[in-house]
Image 1 (cartoon, helix red, strand yellow):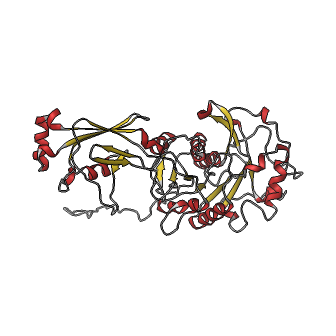
Image 2 (tube, one colour):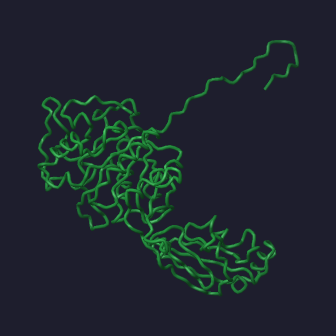
Image 3 (cartoon, one colour):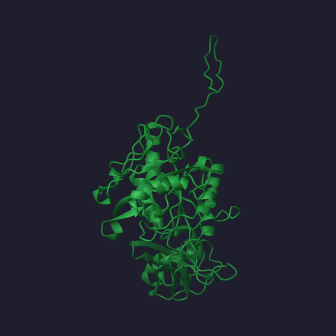
Length: 420
């Protein structure tokens, strides 16, 4: 702003500097792709804690390895994650959505999944419960009192309750038409659609009418094509194109004891190259069937044509071995095997936040996770130490220490660490 000169003398004017601080780009945002109990499909959602993941996607799921990987991510220091839920419908006429019909009011769960079968709904008429308030609402919205009804939705599993007042089914109901209100305000239900995509408005439901969700299911197991998706439609891993940024990509297998198909890993690594991210690859399940032969299988596989990931995009991927042994809270605290990608993403995120990306090269100053007594190969001899017996493993997750296996280690030579 120019200085007003009101008298002779020297005036000092401060001008803003042309120098602007360059803010750092986040380096510790992990993306997870896989099945979950609930939540939007093929739409990345940002979660800052496991509690937020539980609210949006249903939390731990015994048949969903991705949920355990996300739990490990936050438990090991991760702070921000992009979650992409995938869902495979059982048939063209079975989309997995639970239907909730309250008299003539046709609703459905907001997302596919068996969780929608726990929904209940009830409608009441405000002219019977609050005549004065109903008349005031009718005058405000330009409707008749007889057009209005109230709707209560409850998720009996989580005890979440939503209450919507002064709704109408009239096509000219404006801002209080129930399908519009539910689309903008409800996280549990939405209006059912006709075959042409228009909303099923139906008729006004009766007073004290009840309904329960039915027909919801968790879909079928995912195939290679479901994981990969379509780049143009932005489905599967390509749904992450809708996200602002991510640096680490985790794609757990679809089943606990399963292995992610090699075609999915190849496409994911190629996608990471275009997005300047790193794919965290989980070891195949068969590597650990015989403990004494595990390390040999790892080296042989990576040095053969049957390697987990080809060398075409290996610079944008990291393989971590072995799988983690931790307690499963959904199975009475029993020790079970889980993929390590989530835990390693959490460690990388915590290290980058606490020390910075240029201060902690691999295995120097960073916090590790893994098996007691298995610290990787002896660089002087190029040999791996003996694996401890599984019965000697500690029960708590923070004391497990898996190997960080890179191409140099697999070839039995001293690795040259670098930060991507």
